[in-house]
Length: 332
Ligand SMILES: Cc1cc2nc3c(=O)[nH]c(=O)nc-3n(C[C@H](O)[C@H](O)[C@H](O)COP(=O)(O)OP(=O)(O)OC[C@H]3O[C@@H](n4cnc5c(N)ncnc54)[C@H](O)[C@@H]3O)c2cc1C
Picture 1 (cartoon, protein in one colour):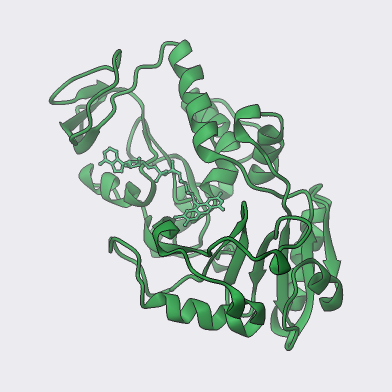
Picture 2 (cartoon, helix red, strand yellow):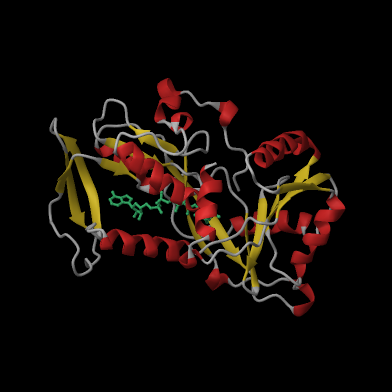
């Protein structure tokens, strides 16, 4: 529901540049029942997701169908320009009087009984004109921990435990596709659920990747040896990959901000007055951001928001528990 509402907002937002390229999952037999159940729930919530036969799916993105029970496809799903969205919100916030302290790293957090004392240091970025500027920090009655993959580290500065950590992901980029390989439309975000290999169009190229479950920690840069595993998975399901080239300079990497159940942590922190978590989106933060902003604003005001965030509160991890039943499975 969080993503559904955010996507509806992005569709109306010119700066988001919404492009409905669609989403296509190839599902192996072992995951078919679970996926059918997921699709039933998604349809009940208003998403126009359809189940396809393997042959129908292969007409959208050609694939080797061995071991595939079927596919799920949502033609309305799409891609946005996250930078466009972010800059539009920054401009709106500035117009409302919000001051940004750019290039300040939070290095210490303590609570004096009334407010948080936030210590900062200049992280080497020159502040924009009009930004609030202070060398040693500021006080805040309310504080939102929205530090992405670093949210666990930031919480630790205050002696708090927030189970969010980094999971590095590589995005490999092909060279421009030859005319023979270009479909008459962009390739949707296509996932082979047997391996986790994903691909989609990025203008005249494809981008693709495969998660490495061992790659947790703050390692930096592209893990080039992982390209071999990625290509092997790609060739197994999409043998036409053999005809593609790689543009090494256009490849990139970043951190997912994972929680133990791959769902976000939203809402007030128990025993930490004025501390609100908005983190741990586990690779879904862009598609959820618009709704999360409203939910966190409601939480800060002590109001109930448009969606019940109860199941996403940090209390679900009390005593080190991981609520497996609600774990998100479709992470790539
Ligand atoms: C390869 C890749 C593909 C992705 N694809 C998708 C996708 O298709 N759809 C989707 O919805 N999401 C996707 N994501 C995930 C999405 O990018 C994240 O979920 C989202 O960016 C999280 O936003 P955030 O604001 O919570 O954290 P971030 O965008 O990480 O922002 C956190 C900020 O906190 C700052 N910070 C950290 N520590 C400190 C400190 N001590 N002091 C001050 N500032 C600090 C960081 O510098 C950073 O600017 C993808 C991520 C990756 C890496």
